[in-house]
Image (cartoon, rainbow, N blue to C red; front, side, top):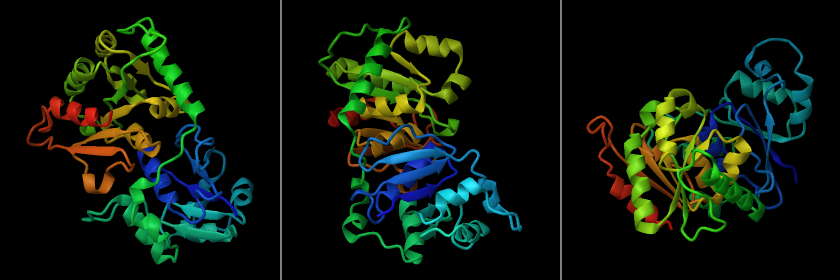
Length: 332
């Protein structure tokens, strides 16, 4: 039984959903694992069940796949894919990329166009799965009927590492709270950012949600800000946030995985950390505005979505902080 190799070129959210799709493939979860080749680092998932190991696409020569030429294939790429079962999420089955990959003699090759179909309302993973079925790669019926139930098994060691990072955030010099040895209340992580500004629910709404959770459930709320927020938010905005709640600033991919696995709930926008939390089985509340929920919602047994309309209500999207807090409380 050989592992699957996934070739991927997108950001964290798309990569996470591609992994969700790959969890439905034959043998995955029954002794087989996944090798992800991607420019995006999802963090160390090698100890999860099934095991997911990532290899950077840098230096493999993936550009060779996109050219109609007579150049020999890059040696490292050929060595990696020869005899492997390959899921190509770079381009569809009728492209030069698929043709090039066949030249590398994989044991099996299935390709999908990662772009959503125009006007399609089915979830993106279902659209991708249909493409694979057209290439005679059939998903077992029991998995086909419950795709959202495919999440990773997270080891306790990873959760303990995440809990330690959360305690450190509360002990940081600019933290709003001290870090006791043990906290009785649940830990809620809020990620108020996204790679696209239009997909971000107003920050004031997230702050009000955090205040309500602290008051109603005595929860420990930590805010997570990634590279995009650190680059685009002003120093004053970060200082103001850190003055009221612990702030997790720009965790590494490995730290992000640990933090999300240790959280009791993750609240966020349609963004990579939200999808990753759902993949890890963490209860998740995702706020959607301009992107269609039916196509891009996070998948997971504890994933919940609230959809609003930023065009008609740019101040709140029509989503009230009390509604978000109430939904998060049902996850605790």
